[in-house]
Image (cartoon, rainbow, N blue to C red):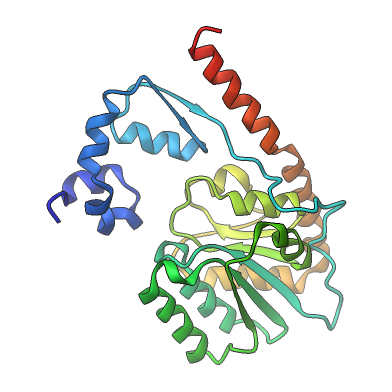
Length: 267
């Protein structure tokens, strides 16, 4: 733990990274920022974080594309649930504590039995946390309501988004949540935490609900509203699809990066 400096890390890092500051070599990063003239980041929150780190150069924001999963959607699909049918939630996140999956499980336990959850993401990235999440699923007797899909190939992700009724992301921090951007493109209403780059993509009450991080009850309450109000779900699905269409594509992101590099080279 030679690189652990709590006073520095707590000033420049989001809270979820404080325990990992040693592995990120924060002083190393802060030092080498002084040798860079510019930086390219994926979202505005990452730009703000970089400046807090002490970076004084120019920061260029180029968001990733929203159109990775195929096939592309033809219309908003997050409002297909009818009375008597299940409400299918989708969460796309690797199993790190910062993603708040254990809180999502707790929130799901507070919802009616017709609300189901698909978890897409790698449980192996943090085995101890994966065990915590699986224990929560067992403790709340949700084995028949939570489907752990694990790592899903990109070519199959389009079908996962298209099969969902809403997207949920209970993270404590997000730089630029690419999966959330993809969910908007598929017209899914969103329930997520009001942190980091999430707030740059979702307006609370428009494309979905933003809730405080670390609190399962507000999360459950927002999900319950989506379940109980089909008209609200349709409005948010339409707004999500419109917001998703306005986000950059991967081709646009590549072109923006190419223009930036050429301009820096004086061409």
